[in-house]
Amino acid sequence: MYKAIGIVSNVVLVPTQKSQIRATILANGRHLCVSSSQCNTLELHQGQIVYCEYSVTPHPFVNCHTAFPLPALLPIGNNIIFSGQNDIFAENYKELCLLTSRISVPCLRSFIDTLCQKTNLFNAFVSIQASCRNHHDYRHGLLQHSIEVAHLSLDTLKSCHFSDEIEQLIIIAALFHDIGKTAHAVYTSECTYVPTNHELSTFSLLSEPMALLYRQNKFWYDTLLTCWEPASKGMSTECVIAKAVKNADQMSAAKNVAEKEFRNCPAHWYFRTCDNRRFLRTPV
Image 1 (spheres, helix red, strand yellow):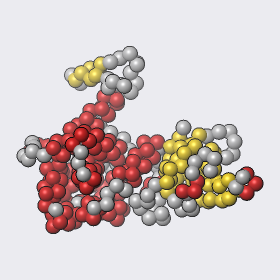
Image 2 (cartoon, rainbow, N blue to C red):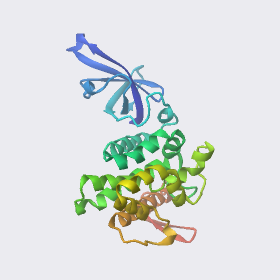
Image 3 (cartoon, rainbow, N blue to C red):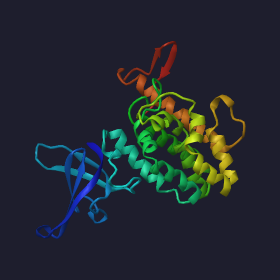
Image 4 (cartoon, one colour):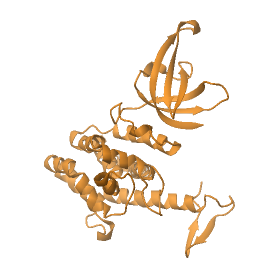
């Protein structure tokens, strides 16, 4: 099963088949066919961005099994999300759309607007790796890592029964915790990861929404400062949200490193040693 982000190119009514509605989706250079007998095509309209799962057959028409409408983060004419796709990108771009659609508080929504309005920033955020030779060191790695940290943070803090507004703050803190890693790509238009002091770059790239947040909610502003402060400083302020985000960051990185170390190892191997470090396989 292949996964992709596509755009609905045509929606038609087929009266000869019990008034069935059929849609055509353009994804990964293919024309995918989906009908109302497979999913709710009433939600689809021409020009809409969708997440789809499809299988390739010998027949000329490709059958689309899933077509899930997504809120558009970028203008339809922007082709960033349609270049160099793979399954990792498609799944995580869908999650990015769903997470950002939850942000409704204006002073928090300004972070999403900043991401979407600055093309170089958005392009780098969804494209570059999260590190050079450590965790998520592949294309779209930063996006995958950021999504994982957001979900892990929300799961960790679920028992706190925070309000919807605070959950939105948690999503912003987690999604943007490593956005400073895009600094080189943003300032040079060279879409690649180059190590920098990314914690400081985060505040530079997000100076405008941070200034707005400071004026409207100083408490939330201090919370984000604590979440994004450099690890070398230690935790200078006790904050349950910051601890959850930092722990989620470490968990996501450790899980990816373990998966990478055991990728080509036999299934019965549960540990291996590399560069004087002992790795344990992540339990399934």
